[in-house]
Image (tube, rainbow, N blue to C red; front, side, top):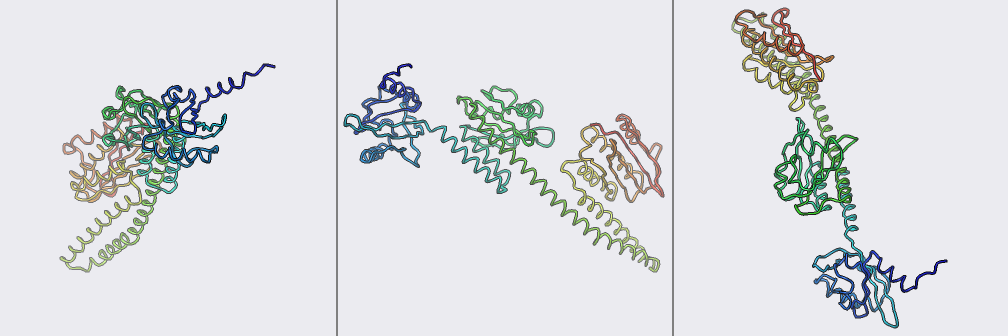
Length: 492
């Protein structure tokens, strides 16, 4: 059996290897012994502290109270944790205050009393406590249904504080082919909100595509980041993807000021926690918006039913009654009855357009909305509002060049009706079915107009259809009027 080393040597080796700074003081509070770990914690070499009062390691404003507590402890000395329930701070050689945890162990050697203080850096423990507080606060907001703006603001504020960042911002899809900085936190970051970024070449787009955290050592040296961010005096930056149910829905960015150290794994894991919370908040926010939209749609559909049942049917009944008595009316009264019937017809047509809009929700900026806007625009030339109907997923199927060509054809068709048809009503139907989009424009005018007065509108519509691999037809509508049909394949 190997002979153990002398007890004194063993104790000395353990004392020197301890990760805690061990400081032994006598009954008068003078330091008589210090372990090697005091150097990494306080910046002093052990021999420099021997003979110094323990208060040299206490912040100046707390020294008076520390002397009082030390003397009180000496009277009833027992092993315990120092300052239970309080946050303690030590003073380093260069004047910095660091959070510490201290355990006290009194002992007696050769009749003299000593106290051994085991001192540990509490920075990481405090960060963990703050992280727990932050997670609890964010979770509370999510569970209580706080607004998306309030929740995201709290998430960014906590992210900045816990990793010592100067700025934080969130990048999300804009909804029209780009990314946008939708929220920011930190001094001067207001200039970032609303900046649009490329959905293919920006740093955020790359992180969205890779779904991997990326750290920039100097954001001011990167070429695919917002120029405004580079002007905020920022240095290292971490881009963390926001993922929900396997999909990347945004990016959380945190950046420290220039000259600050880069983010370590603890920092990145911490930001990852808040990125997850941000993803949950964005998902819940979108779900609430959809629910609110469904509630509005339900209310619009109810209003549409009421308009149809209570207004349109009554107006139609009044018109029928007027037509029934017109044969009994003298000349001047007959003219007024005909004018009233025409007004009722116009009102019914406008109400039905309104009912259609209410009962068929229109996506903001979508094809339906643009089609109704075009109808409103052309009403002045026509002398009445064309009736619009959409069938199938027109908002999802139509975009880009196809959408632009379709609206050019529709505008030309309505212009022809206004110039040549002498119509009193026009029906525009846009449908998507079986991979084809079909635009039909029907009027009750004088019929097909050909010859020199027709202009270049019809050949242009035919050329557009042929270029897109589609068809164009123009024919007579029974009992009167014209029916235009323009069909092209939908290209995904």
